[in-house]
Length: 405
Length: 221
Image (cartoon, rainbow over all chains, first blue to last red; front, side):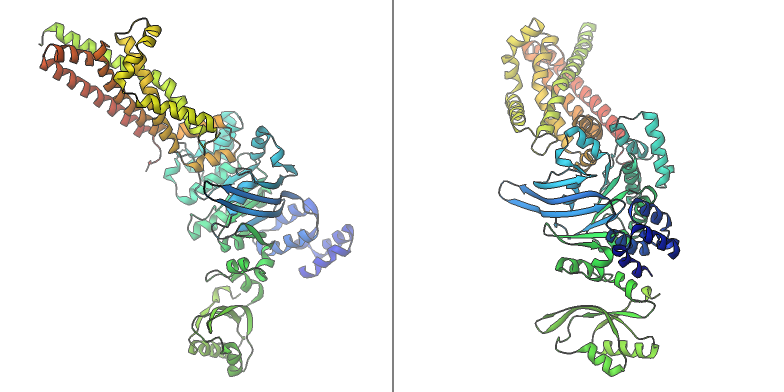
């Protein structure tokens, strides 16, 4: 149904679309253009974030989304004594209001520099950064500082003030803005409640766990009611469970307050978990941008592929999209001859087709390297036969059962 | 030697030493603290890089620190006379002590402030904090334990310097040690003054350590 809606956008008038959508039902109201859309779909997201991603993507096709951050031809060169490093080369980005935008890249790709260009902690060597239509380079020092209050930031190492209590840490941005101490304290208490740490108000950061520290940092970031939240590797120092809870909190904040979130990470899992859009940065240039869906389903560039297929869980997203309740397996090629048509032979031997969901193999000196993800036939016996066939061929076979609906 | 006059004299001179030390340290901080902050702020990767200012301060600090205190003491006699009206006695000791200690303190402050995690400074900047706010609420506040430890070191050093001022009749325990112990060969009085100096340093050290521990919230388990 959703797929049908997208093409209508270009053709039909707004009103017609609205009428139609009303009929289609609540769930698809996300396709309404403009600001209202955001609110509507935000309200309805619930647990179905996965669906909303598609809708957000569709929303962008609708061209009515408001740009909140615009990065144009941004380059940044660091000049050292002996060498100069081009950290960013001609980056163009557009981030829309209400999005959770992921910027992913290997370490050293320039992503941290890029995010610092968004609040001018780093001044780009050339190019412009516009936030809410205002060119940051044109702002006076004072206006820039005022602007930064609207662009909060959280960090990998939390960067809390260690000599202040949790409550005073959250008061800090309010102090900077010159708020009254009493008001600041009340606001800080409110925020502690939002991040679920009310009982830690009087604790010092050293007494908190990593996840708790990041929660405090998030509360601190929210203090000034920012429009944008920049997250620089915010979960990279946390364990997987804590990462999940922090990401859930960020998602919550995005929905509840409509804050645009930019997430810098080197972990694809993070992008998959909450981002609607992603930009892949590689060697200081933007390799690929698009909705998370698109990039995951069809990574075009090498950098994207490298990130999409990284590690064992590299293809979760694909499985979720494509495998609807069938058994999926992942095969890893290490030592097989690339001249042997393993999958073809398997299909012939078992007399049933298998669907290749993902294939990423390379021929290195006559030996196949890489991975494939197959969707097996529903018939258990045939599927079992296929698995044992592959195992006989000395392939590593791993069942991706936890993604089987 | 334990006649009441000697004891009274020792007590009085102990107080004088303490007075000289504390006052000089205070004045030295009035000069050295801003100097140290300026060094950090104007450094190449500081909050407001100003190469020229940094270079000048850096050289001045190094030059003053390289001059041996005893020589500085002599060199500064005309200046001391200009400031306090005479070139001997406790008040006159404070002037050269302050000037000798200020650059030393500037370096102590500089190293304390440089210990502050750059991430905190960046976080404050991302919140729109200006340089003044960052210096006051991030650098100084976060480095406070290290600054107190530095202050304890400074007090110990200045106490030692103050004893040297005894050579030019600066007053205090150092003066006593030189006059009685060195010129009059009364070794027992010299030993007593040394013991008193040790006790003073010890007391200052204990207070400093206690205070810095109490104010440090980084290891609050």
